[in-house]
Image (tube, rainbow, N blue to C red):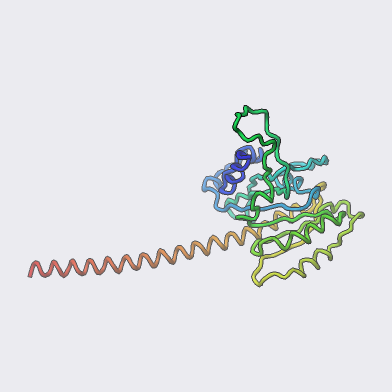
Length: 275
């Protein structure tokens, strides 16, 4: 567990391990190399949440440019990866860290390691899940998924959407649009839910969209949705820079005032010495 925890905590500070970087990103043209030479200007964290079997891990893979895989394999614990994304045609390098969140994971069985006589004989490790970690810490955006053909996955949205911090923009994503003939959740159901949330003034945006991981429908929308958390992050960064700028101006003015007083005093002393 400790090694997995270090991986996620390290990713919080932008230190994701190399194996998480998609292979396609290893080959960069000269233009991209020049951009990366300036370093990463922004680190953005996106969290994917939803009930079991709603397509979270498939979306996680699709955002990395990987192909759709039909086989369903339950995700045992939180997994994180890093993708590179940019805002429109700017040269700013943005590293988007994407978390595929498991609400309640399954701990891994310990191996047959050497056991000492006085060592506690625990059989399982704690899983890295939403019960163990605050997944919204340093989060810039949330994708909350449900299956439009399963009512119980919509109940998850009803329960969890109000818990998202109000400053974080959210995209509620109705997945399995390719199975629309079996739909039980209508778009108006989501819009009514969003409209009925009692959110304080100044809260961030909640958008509704639909997707199909099978044919890629909705992926372009999500890439554009990333504009919202990025622009909020950019604005916060600029405001902090302005605050620092003002503090530097105030400090410089104070230094100039002190220096002027010191120089005036030294000048007066010199005048007394030569009079």
